[in-house]
Image (cartoon, rainbow over all chains, first blue to last red):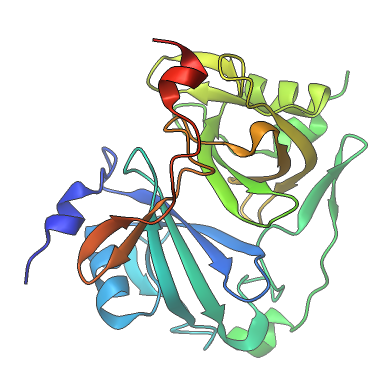
Length: 129
Length: 129
């Protein structure tokens, strides 16, 4: 299998690139996660988002525990070859481990971060106790 | 001036966080850039996007050379406190230094990156020769 397209991507010193997941239907930016080469390769091969978990130091198929998989419609690369954008269909309508639709639920208002998106499902119900 | 909100942001070992700029009108993801603490503080204070240029190692007001400033409508932070999302009004309708609307103009198709967005303005006309 050729990987010329993969060779173009400029992974950083840790072997990672930031990857934005955007909801293909609503246009909302859901998450920013990280990919190593294998995560990007698997994402392209399976059309399901795979990331590199920096906290757990392992490859991770998004939704493998929660069921909240991201079906990938498009994979894009930026002008500097060092950032990825995925257009995804978000299973369950929940991308965030807090049970919210998306991770960007804090908005700066009058010098404070305010939570502006509701918890749709208790994380305990998503992941078990 | 209080900076409690700034203290919450988890900058990486290099003092940076990734910052996504999304067009507030079209919903398109325009760019992924980087901010240090000062860039984020100035962005909030001026409501114009400021970034840290890793290649030039300097603070940079988006549009300072091109005129393609980003007026900031919203600043968001994610669940891990380590990624920023800006909702912006993009002056000139051009966010990318290549003269395209946005930086994510390469789409993966059949194992190759294909340019899928047109150059709207010659970079020489934007930046001068």
